[in-house]
Amino acid sequence: MITSHQNPLVKSTLRLRSSSHRKKQGRFLIDGTREIRLAMGSGYSVETIFFSSSQEQELSEFAEQSLATSQPRLITVSPEIMMKLSYGERNDTPLAVAQTPSLPLQDLKLSRESLV
Image (cartoon, rainbow, N blue to C red; front, side, top):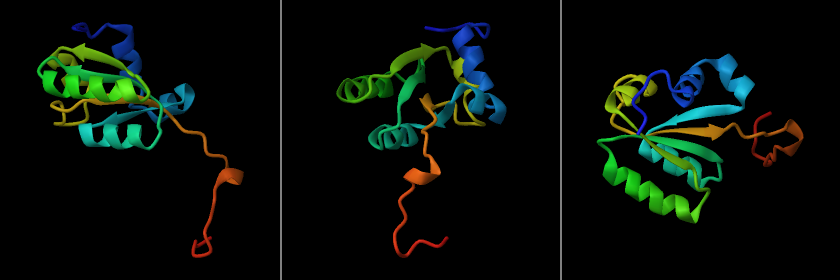
């Protein structure tokens, strides 16, 4: 369990709050159980999922799901670290780090009804 605010992984994750760091690292944050599950189900490459030590039930559910999908690192952190990592008052939900998908303009598929 990570308990230090000086942990390099915590520091790196906190930097992702900044747009310039997200672009530089090619990664972004996903905050919340539902949002993480949607991202994983949609094929996003989720690298790491942070859980508060008080979220053991959700941790075991994600462990089961991750065995069948992308296998992100599951990391338990202290409630204090989770408060620092989470957006606003959402410190009771997991937080994930995922790779920013690359979608070149030429790969964008438009339907006939699309407004351009």
